[in-house]
Image (cartoon, rainbow, N blue to C red; front, side):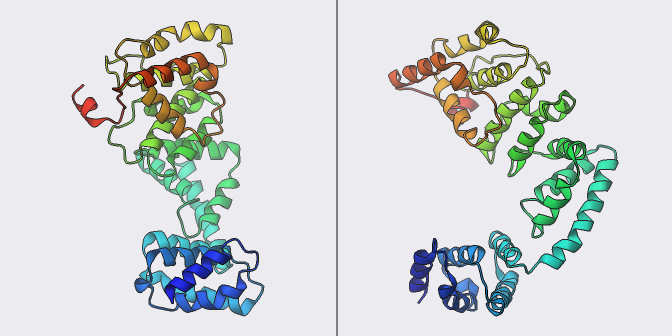
Length: 330
């Protein structure tokens, strides 16, 4: 019964020896896939991905069962099937052959003139490390580029990213870590406030902050100049962007920081400012996994952060950047 198989998979999920459950798994994989419950499909593929098989016959049986699934599974589950096949060693020949193809395409892109087409191709090559059946071929080929080649690829890929979608933030983070003013042209476009209807708002906020930190690290002047809109939902994000720029600037001493940021900080303290706490929350949440940001506004301005939080607790009305009504009627 499907329920019993799911319960069995739950029991053996963290067990070192999972092979005892393999006959039940193979039986379910050979059943018509579209009639399997979705949570059971995920559990089956999760089991297959992490199992370690010593028996080559069992491994081949599992490979055959997985390959039979591919024509009928969704794109999301197909990627999980390919990952499992790679884990089982079923794609070694294909991956070895594909590495040459990826290397040839990398050479073409990196030696061609920079254009919207080549930048789009660069982004596709970068994303191939995460979202391609032969992802390891892309990882190996890009790893072999060397520092300068990889930086050029990342620069072009960031220019080729049309919006804050999947895999853009890690790509952007890696480029920023070069701490090189020559890549500023690929970073500056993300200084604009994130789109209010962004499909991935946390990614969009992270890119906005990374853009400011990324220009601050090598000391590239900010352009365009700071402008406040008289809007309690947008201004706090503008302020936080400026603060992340200055705390990463190499030529600003700690005692100078408050003086330089005085105008920006005063916006947080303006009467009627209802969006500071929301902006701070969005930024800290979106950057929680970004270890590469060397300095934090919370660490450098602890008194200001405490003041923002206290004011938020005292007020009954707060607004956030993603508050559509407040934004559309600003």
